[in-house]
Length: 244
Image 1 (cartoon, rainbow, N blue to C red):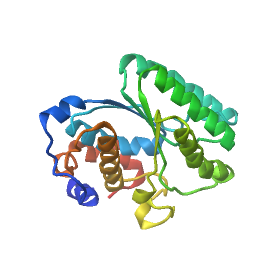
Image 2: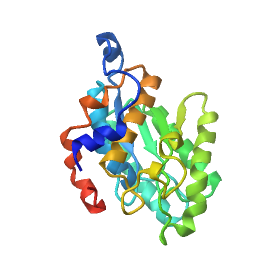
Image 3: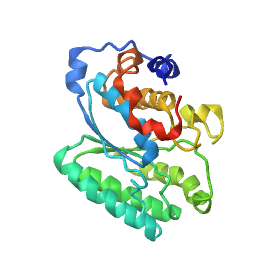
């Protein structure tokens, strides 16, 4: 896929990429990005967009995992690995923001999901970081995910409830305005596998999410022209999804 196509897919937003030095000095937040492989395909342009906006970024997403929800045995094992990695990243990277995208493995009852998100919120608070929980894009429910469809559907509501009761310590960012709700719809911008995004969809997310963080943390997002044509467009993560 050409860099120009990625740029075309995320153009037409707010800001001209300019900001005062005072704003940038006030910002400079360190953002830790946590999630599964869906978050992983969004990470390359997100890193480029945030760095162009004067922020720091670390991708802590995990293929085939990344969840914090301790529902069934498999999910609990994955969550244990997530927390092990999170502990290391909190010590080494010392993020100001933990941004957790709800994963395709957030399996459990709504009560289990709420308890798990509250645990993550407590972990963030103890580390001196704010927590943003981001809804996942609509994705194909194949044979593997079919029996977890109820949990995949309930997770965003559980997260929003935790945020609403947090007294401003947790932010829930609903990406529905970006992705829509139709799993096979054009707005969802899924790759051929119906689950992950290609460069253009990932760039659209990076633009949207950087704007949300800018509003929240007081910095002006860089214009897409400053980052959307970067080397990230050739990242090997996109190869398996037949991105053109």
